[in-house]
Length: 302
Image (cartoon, rainbow, N blue to C red):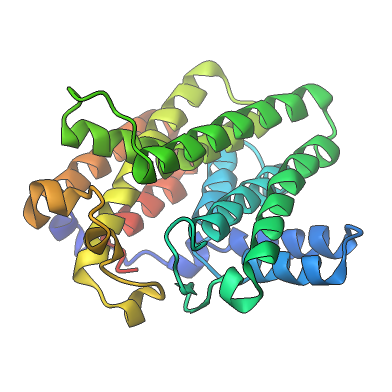
């Protein structure tokens, strides 16, 4: 595998083109919330949380994984919408005073600052239930819908477990700090990213080998994403990130730079980048967007 420095002679990745499916996902999510009968203030709060920007990484991974094994954007829209709803619910609840007590998310006030704590809790609850409603009612094949509901439910509960490992840890005393950190990251961040790749493959009717390849890719790229996040938390400013910088170290949380240092963390990013790309070797040109996503995520600055 080539290193980032060795790829300088290659054409730059067109990030806008790579993440273009995010626009269709955004419109789909907006319509779901607009059409669903809801109290007006709850709808506004949910839209603030769901449609207020962000990378849309998980929906884009669903679409690009679906396309990598022969599916289409239209196939991927329901799970892409559902996944982003779960992700945004987790951010809303993560920002609450009882959790991280954050005032800033995506460059603007967090939902409980924009409205109030009660509405933020309820909007997060709504997004959780609505995610599964979308899968159950908007995927025509009931067997496929059930499989997607199961996949997302497992990932959601793993993500919640990761939040507990992170904020209310209950590890056996013999577990080493680096193993604690990997467990936190594989669950809190990695579970939804891994499930995104799997959901896209499942919606496309993948075979077991393809599912295993995209699962391996999702596991590696998900952990890589979080290691990069750890690095950005200590190397970038609040203004650049659009959220408070340095909050993990201030809170005494386990991070890769805190445990192994910045240089070793960068080497871990490179190792996981190579592992992600290796997983896609036999998927051919259809998986090129996933390769490009991996390359972009390895060097992102926010």
